[in-house]
Length: 379
Image 1 (cartoon, rainbow, N blue to C red):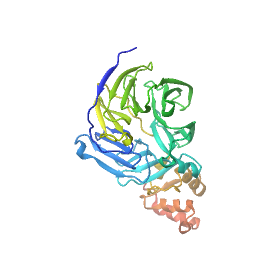
Image 2 (cartoon, rainbow, N blue to C red):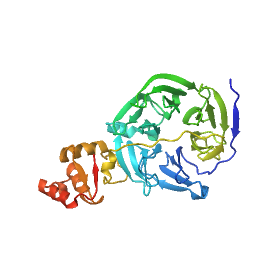
Image 3 (tube, rainbow, N blue to C red):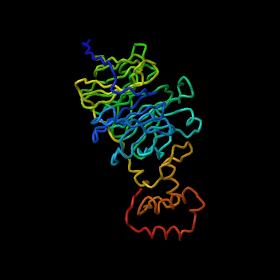
Image 4 (cartoon, rainbow, N blue to C red):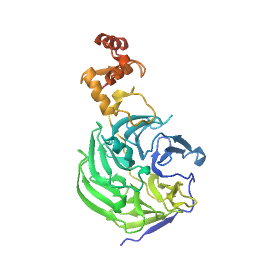
């Protein structure tokens, strides 16, 4: 058994009393940390160059469980989020969203479930788990782990989950690790990076304490730093599944970590009821983490004009919009537009069946001719 190194955190970086602080994410381009409060529907941002006084809070229209960067898009403008009913692009200036793909085809599931933790894999696919929303009460085995490919194809990886949590990949990109909180287990799977397929499910590590494993992150040496909700600890677990380090915190409900250089930043929840419940913490552990991957998709770049809107459960997802557009315009049509206010709304409204936009083919051709070739996006 390896010796255990110990760290003790005695006070928070900032005590902001999150209901359920989660999903800390470091933005190296601006030296900024963002994280969510799932219960209060907040997106928090802190400029680490300035410190706690720079905290800004964006009120969201739905619970968000996880965020990710999008390749080719400025993360200070838009990010990918796992939300109430699916995955969305969120505009950070006002919190409005575009629904890219639903989790479920059932309105009942939309109501009962929400996103929890997730991550982007080495090839830019988005993996995310769902669980019962707060109003349902004690979580039931109704959750699912999904994988969303670069073309937004949705794959069901595992069903019957209660609280799906941390997801991550080994440095050699051959193994996927997944924490299922209520099983007290980190599961390991063989992972095929070329296809996203996982096989050979097995137990990597099982917790034997009264608390529950929550989110985790990998360091650069392949160790997992696993939050233990209810025990006020983060455990460092080596590649052999042995606990080799422990950080203790002055609050019980530790939720999710992220590396910023050699510092581990950790969110928490208010469930413990103590002075620092829901605070944000940091501790220097002397090692950095593996890089986060960005979501890669060419599909929605063709639809930059699709309007953002406040969260609505009735929104069509992007795949449905693409299907409708292909029926109106043909499968190989290129949408041309001078700006987001020009031809696209005409085509979009026609595809959606809005009466004011339905006109003759000549009207549509005239509209396309008017905008010419000044800019184009293909799909």
